[in-house]
Length: 381
Ligand SMILES: Nc1ncnc2c1ncn2[C@@H]1O[C@H](COP(=O)(O)OP(=O)(O)OP(=O)(O)O)[C@@H](O)[C@H]1O
Image (cartoon, rainbow, N blue to C red; front, side, top):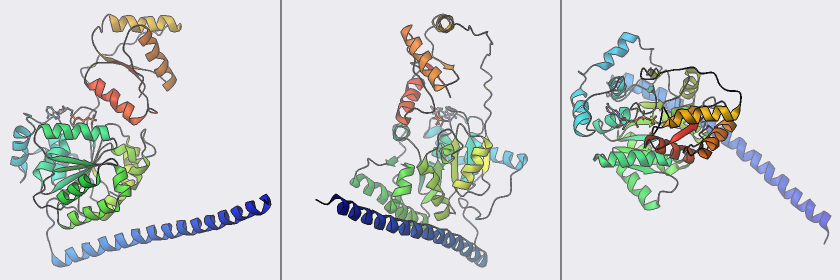
């Protein structure tokens, strides 16, 4: 066999495929530019039409242009209970969620999103962010679309919502065709059989069928709100960037009148600015809860330079003062996190490493053990 000729053929075919690929990439870029241009043309026309007809926007819709920044006083007005939806919100808090009162800033966030504002909520873990979109979902017509990065987080929330008789479903890569069909049919049903539809960002990025069903629901005014949980995942400057979150800007471009609600426990203002750009929201209202924990007590001790002595110190604290309790040991690096947890295990303390590079499902397992209060964890955040 003439190897030279065979290689030449392969090389020629490779050159041709590469040339074709380049052409396709060029066409994709051109089409994306065209899409952006048409979408902004469409928004401008919609605005023109609305102004010409003098129509009043429904309470759940919002201006297409940037909102002026809200003053502190204006924001405080959203702590009130005299909005058209206030009675229903109060009733659902008690009767559906079985809670007696709101925690700080929950009512403000709920009123802002009910008023149709785009909103970013930064609140520490466990303070009750989810209620701020779940409660408005049951008080609004149609359904709320919730973007969540992890299937395990979706499962936890759906299990909880089902336990309190609130209908919620999810769509992810492992959903069967029948299930997806049922969910998509539900999204078009004016009776809204599902008040919350949880999807992974991948679904938004990859399923044209889902986007077309969302478009139909939007036109029928059944898409009441879009919640983007763990919104910091949009930004490459954040600690948990997810490439598919980068494509979520399509939601605001396609559904400009639907209020968007981004939630996170960890985002700096520059990360939020980046998320704003990626999600195509213009000047959302941002609410940041205090991270100061008044119940925490701080004590500074001198660290022993000898590793063994240091581990003995930590061990005696855990086994003595903190016996039968759980806690976190913060360290400097992933390597330290692994070393300290393994040393603690050797001393009969159940410890788990936790760090930014962990597999997301593993991370979620640690969160669950953590909330079950069963672990002595050791972690770097
Ligand atoms: N107003 C309230 N009163 C009492 N409990 C509440 C209230 N709001 C929320 N909770 C409870 O607080 C717990 C934590 O809520 P949730 O999971 O929504 O926190 P989160 O801020 O979303 O946390 P994460 O950052 O982990 O997603 C839940 O058990 C929830 O039922």
